[in-house]
Length: 433
Ligand SMILES: [Zn+2]
Image (cartoon, rainbow, N blue to C red; front, side):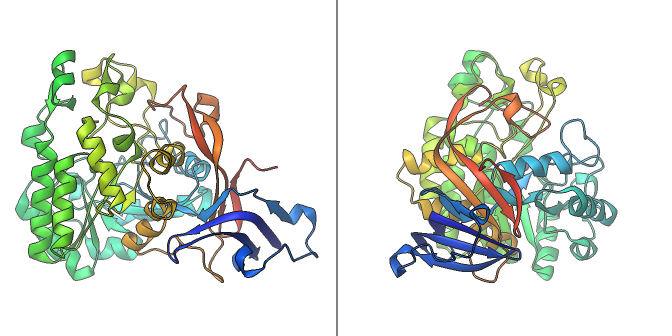
């Protein structure tokens, strides 16, 4: 079986390629990459019209990888399942996701890790890499059996949703992780300062009369975990960076050679605390939306490579958790299906190089997680994503594949949309006819 994607703008951050050309897929693998500048002019005349896709200049990039999602299965299948979450991932251009362990029960045991992997293999529209807990029950005390969890297929360790409060426990976790050469993902938050805050602390929280979470709560936690990574030599990844101070700490640590990487999410470079105005529970998340100064710092961090990855922190909730008063509403928004549209603004408005943008969504997460994919290479599985950067995308309940629709972008018209996702040669999402 052969398919040819022609007249594409091929963007491959792994090789630095950004050229017009074509990709030939044969038996699930990339069989050839042909560039216009090398004289390629649409050979393969043996192919039927149904095997040729004229992409008319659309971007053809490696299948995207999201290193931070919540799939809610097991335990909260009314919000999302492995099937619906990965279907939403495919619609967003993703061929692989790493799912966080705060399910019910939490993923602190090989039976849960194995369940997720089996379910994903049966029903998943994307590869699923389970992230296991650092501590049993995410209680912040006893460490999980890292060796057994890794053997069962855990890709990394995190107590995401909560920080590891006790520095001695985090130190021990990093020492064990280092022994396994495993990745620790930090949900960086100093709980004492978070207290019962529900949004960013500042002008807006005062105006709305809501309890604030100061940005220094993130700064202190990022500082601690970088210090521990430096001390133990462990591989550390900072999740969902939202503040200017955290960006600066990570920049400095990288310059010093500390083994730290970091991600942010599209909402942190798209929105600010202003979005909470009107007590909009779809703008409630953790960490909270911050100030314009923080937003600009996050953008700078992505542009200069301080922040390696764009992850969605896809966090589905039903109306039961969101259509309540702001104080009581659950944290988080869905993000898989809007990530590309929102991230394209970095190129359109902020002068980010398309190669770098795609690196944040594919090649960099692949390297951090040490998984296959994230690049366009001959003989590798055909993991592809086609993006129409001009196509409007109206975010409506009907247009979303996720079971939940808790997004502040609901009802908005975004620009740019994923029109095809292919995982190992299998089309998992298509708007092309
Ligand atoms: Zn988190």
